[in-house]
Image: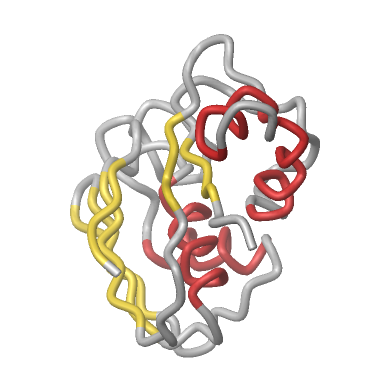
Length: 147
């Protein structure tokens, strides 16, 4: 899948993490599991603020959500994902800016008049997002292609 960049000073605070270093691999694996993803066969390595993850998620959507669950944690600046998944149109990763709403992000990515598609963005980022109004600057969101 490739390399994904995150802002290491924002995100979920996990025991053992700091702005200088990501949490240990076991703690990151527990974070992924906390969001309801199968961690069986998931290999996570941590080197400073870089996390390498490999495995065989059942589809590209789950693989992308695992990357987001890892990257949106304190101390992670890069996630290198090496997943074996079926190819389908990949989502766009978007960094939330000050003043953004999911409606505004939908209009930016899908076009004028398509702000109502914010629900697709919200659904694509569950369970990391609990409510459509609870996003913050620096957070990375998955913007799925429209059907």
